Amino acid sequence: MHTVVVGTSGVTASDVLAVARDGARIELSDEAVAALAAAREIVDALAAKPEPVYGVSTGFGALASRHISPELRAQLQRNIVRSHAAGLGPRVEREVVRALMFLRLKTVCSGHTGVRPEVAQTMADVLNAGITPVVHEYGSLGCSGDLAPLSHCALTLMGEGDAEGPDGVVRPAGELLAEHGITPVELREKEGLALLNGTDGMLGMLVMALADLDTLYKSADITAALSLEALLGTDKVLAPELHAIRPHPGQGAAAANMLAVLKGSGLTGHHQDDAPRVQDAYSVRCAPQVAGAGRDTLAHARLVAERELASAVDNPVVLPDGRVESNGNFHGAPVAYVLDFLAIAVADLASIAERRTDRLLDKNRSHGLPPFLADDAGVDSGLMIAQYTQAALVSELKRLAVPASADSIPSSAMQEDHVSMGWSAARKLRTAVDNLARVLAVELYAATRAIELREGLAPAPASQAAIEAVRAAGVQGPGPDRFLAPDLAAADAFVRAGLLVAAVVPVTGPLL
Image (cartoon, rainbow, N blue to C red; front, side):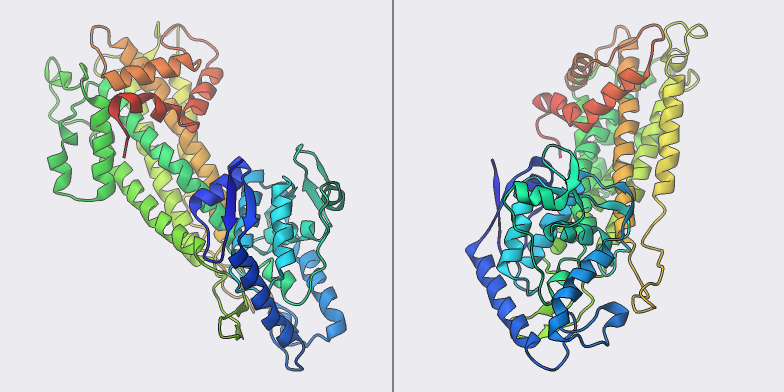
């Protein structure tokens, strides 16, 4: 099994995906253990002094003015975890919780939190055992970090609350730790606070969304190319010299991908034969511009994610010169903004895909295709309601594009008077990514059927490879009406798993 070694300088997106989705094992580097021990010495020295230090010998948030006596400090750290583990709603997905815990461990291992090495090792042990704390949908305002979700994770380290075992069964966390030989942690000064105070949940969901969208944007270029073919459109608008004079990198990449898919097509350009069109509709002609803008958004979001992955997010932090300083680095604004930005790009990509699908089904605009791609229109309804489903998904995506980060609800007696709502932005982006895959699946279903209905005209070799692969996956071709939901579900699974991209790449070469 793949092993991820956590050091002091952050982790990569690949590390996060390996732990969250693939169950990779985690080891702490010797450098990280040494940094943990050195920072802990500083915290212990401050704890022994009579002067109050925030997070070490004081209360938290609006209660920071109270100096806590030494005999109550262990109770203070337990209490912050218990009281902050106040989430409600449905359970959060296993991969999100694993990413959340792993990214908190990443910051702990930076040596800036003052957490003891044995606490960090316990975090790694819990992940390696396949134990997943029960975390709920609601409870984070994205400032100070993802407090409630991280608190539920910290509760598991203490042997309290509920967690899911490697068998998928939810049980008391203490029982699961005991079965795997893991001793619950007894938190000391600052440790409870350090386990709760980060952007780890929203960052983990951003990293996973970026990975999923990388595949879906390539898939969208393929479905756009298939629709262009099915509509007998022209590929001249994809010429590199046209995109070179508007040098947005994403636009050029999208056009190049579409052109690669369409190479050798016997369908493109036929609109000039019997029913001349000066130009194709925007949803066809401007596909690279819309998908390209989304790609550039992805690039910006990836840069933000890389910076956050290299960060140590906590308050207060232990600095190399021995100071322990309060700060605002836990604020989720940088991550929240790009999560919202991605939701906007996703909604627009889905919207243009739906317009192409609608065009394929409309006999007045499809240039010779049967109404709704039906076998016997009137007796058969064809894909009429498949487009309804797609339209419903797009409408939902537009609602999900409303920014969460533009909202702020003050909390903690106005001490935390401006919050990021980054967790909420991440949660709605996950839904948006899922819906985008469904929208592209419907376009794929319609476009492949439409191409097969163009008798006597051969599609591009890459298009033919896509059609053959999707048919082999159980998605049926043209014919009389049938129970459509299973076909659409199979197309969705095909797109979501990256199989559409995998089908054309042997013909096109790597897509951008």
